[in-house]
Amino acid sequence: MDSPSGQPSIELFGITIMEPMVTFTDLWITAVCIYAFIKLLKLKKPGKVQQHMRWYFLIMGLATFLGGLLGHAFQYAIGLEWKLPGWLISMLAVMAVERASIVHAQPLINKTFGKALGVANVVELLTFAFITFYTLNFFFIQVHSAYGLALVVLPLHFLVFWRTRNNGSRIFVLTVLFSILAAVFYTSGISISIWFNHLDLAHTIMTMSMYFLYIGTIQLEDMQPEDMQTERGTFKEAVKALFVK
Image (cartoon, rainbow, N blue to C red):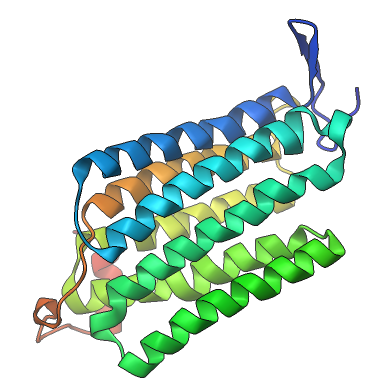
């Protein structure tokens, strides 16, 4: 059976599985997300940052689970439009990590600007969700993810790292930069073989990124004004400190 990515289908217990490795690597992300959620739940760290990040891992786990089964394994039986539930739910996950980043950086930014970011967080989700649902063009979900990570999560965590040298924010910045590789593989079509194609490579990068975000989340707390360093150094010094501890 032909698949969108060209990966051959297999039969398992008499059931046809389309894009089996793509499905597996999607569920790989799910497993890491659920692991992170359970571990963070048991950790019981207080604060809204931790709460939002627990939601992030739980929602992303659900999104990739549905994406793997509905968007890949059984797409031949239910249709391309059933990619939509997983993609739309993933937008809620991006919203959650954005919200966590906004709350984390709140003591270091203008109060009005922080509130504006919170409103924009909701507006952007509703806008991109409506456009995606109306057009069934999944490109807009990728744009939403890129916007959320590159223009909200990355700069806010870099600001926190610059002002406080918080190691959790350092991990977040490096992880977002690392996750760009997933987009490169996804859009370029670079593959190792038909059994480990560009989607599998992208999913593998995402799996690693989820674990790194979990490690970073453990070290995040609701910031306080007294956490700021009086001597924060230059932008160049902060960038250097990201890569050289």
